[in-house]
Structures are given as structure tokens and as C-alpha cells.
Image (cartoon, helix red, strand yellow):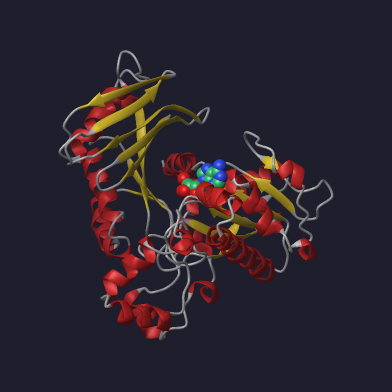
Length: 396
Ligand code: AMP
């Protein structure tokens, strides 16, 4: 069966067509500037790339063009739309409305609307992408796969904030986490690589990218994660502050004359390593800055490694042990310096990084701890689309 994975944003739509027998990506691409002048689709298939430039006033027109590209005489990989067995849609937030991936029904679509206020930038866009696909492919099963699903196994003591219980009940304010598909994928890949059952492993997965989150995966299940009610929580990130005393937020808002919504925008867009360094949110720029002697770039990198290290240590404590640390996503996969900074000082837990190996660039899974390290340190490229396709196939 072939599954189309769709990740719809408010003005963009990324997709992959995956053959579930081989798990190979047959085609992929993305539409940009939907509803904005200058929209285009960049599509890959058959080892070739093609750019389609056409006005796409809405997501329906965009998905129609994607289907056309999938059947293109040159880069196409299918003969007819009927070859697409199902569509898996990435959805950022589920709240407590969905505990697991879900097949779409009219009732599910109504429930999805209730999640909009939890992720106002992302979930309405996913719903728009879903509506467009249903219009274009009315007979094809659709599934929703949530970034938060993997974190639904967290115990109450881990996901609750110390607020009034009645307010948690009334408003659903609790920790939901993020990047769940990535944490799930890399923890499963780690178990496979180590030749162990997931049930027998205590793993800390570090998804370190533009947004970063760290998860404790005990026996294959997520038991804690660093992101909270929204992806603003946890370690400082590219432009996000990470966790901060709520009273400092009120103090800052008063001093800067910002209302509540603008304060949250400030914490999301102007803070993190970009705000600390005053240079960039990109870790490559911070590395270069630190090498040239920029103390604020060095501080931003130090803070990131230190805060991440504290999550690794606290999750080892939460699980009562640690067998493996996994690094993934843009920074986790590509920055030996950050990995070294995080592992440094964790020797007391049994973490022994092989600095030479850590400095090498290797495709696929890369073991960067010394051979007799009791805690394995692995770099594993993430593949969120494949998880969405697998979950969708499982639902069918
Ligand atoms: P992601 O959100 O997973 O796509 O990660 C994007 C981030 O990865 C970028 O903003 C960079 O900070 C970081 N990144 C990518 N390549 C490198 C690299 N070679 N060294 C350090 N950081 C990198």
C-alpha cells in the first residue's frame, strides 16, 4: 500500500508518498505561498525534481496540483489517484481530545476544531489541509497523527502543573509535550540498533532542532518530556525562552508595556539563543561566533548544553537508570560540540563519549560512546513522516 503523508501549514503543504512494503519514499515535495502571490510546488520523484509555478489561492488547488505531480509523465510515480491507500495528516496538538492516532469521521473533524485554541498557528492549518484532501480524494481513508500522542503515556505526576486541580479539569492546562513522532521513532530505532526489546531499555531522547525537546522513554513508553502545555517550555531554543518563572514573565510584561499575548510572542520569537547571543538562532552561526571570541554566542551554547544536560540527569533519576541517550534533529544530528557539551559531566551516570567518533560525520545510526560505555550514546536521524505513515497503515 502507498500512503500519502501531509503536513499542512497555513500557507504551505509538505508531502511524502511512502510505499509501505519497502518503507521507501517514492515522491516528496512541498507547496509554498498558498493564498499568497507567487505560489509554487517543488516536487521530487523518479530521482528528478520539477518546479510548478501556478496560482494556488487555497489548499484544495494545492493538493490537486500535488496529485497531478504524483501522476506526472516525467516525475510521476503513480498512474492513478486510486493507488493512494490512505492519507496521514500531521497534527501538532491533540489536547486531551485524542489519545492516539485516529481515523477521520465527520465527528472526529468536529472534535479537531476543539483543539484549535491549543495550537492556533498549526491545528487550523492541518484541518484546512484535511478538508482539501477530503474534497479531492473523497473515497480515500484519512488519518490524524498527533505530535502529542507518544506522550499520552506520561503518568499524572509528570504531566500535571502545580495549579488548582479544578482549573486543570476545566481548562485542560497540563503538559502535553511535542515532537512525539520523532521521540517514538528514534527510541524504537535505538532499541533495534542495540538488539534489545524496547521494554528492556531506559532511554533519554534529545530532539534538538529549531525547537528542542527531551523525553524519558522507559520500557518503550514516554514517562516525561520537557515541553509543556505548548512548545515554549523546556530548554531554551532558537528563539524560544524555554521555561521561565511565571512572575518574571509578568514583571517583564509590565516593564516592556506588553499585553499577555504580545509577551508570549516575545518569549516565542525574540528570546532563546537568538536573544542571548544577539547574533542568530542558528547553531552554526553561534559556533562561528564563539570561535571568533563572541562571549554571548559562547554563553548561548553553554546554556543550551547545560539545560539539556540537566534534563538528561533528571530523567535518569525519574526512570531510576539510564541505558542510552539518543541525539536527533538538526542540532542533535549535526553538532558534535553540543553533544559533547551535554555529555560532559555525565560520566558519573556511566556516559562515556568517544570524542573522536563524535567528531565524525556518518550517515544513518552513529554510535558515539566508547565501546565499554555502560550508557550508549547514539545519533539517529529522525523520520517523522515514516512514523505518520506507519501509524496510518496500522489504523487501516
Ligand atoms: P531542525 O528544526 O531539526 O530542522 O533543525 C534546524 C537547526 O539545526 C538549525 O536552526 C541549526 O541551528 C541546526 N543545525 C543544522 N545544521 C547544523 C550544523 N552543521 N551544526 C550545528 N547546528 C546545525
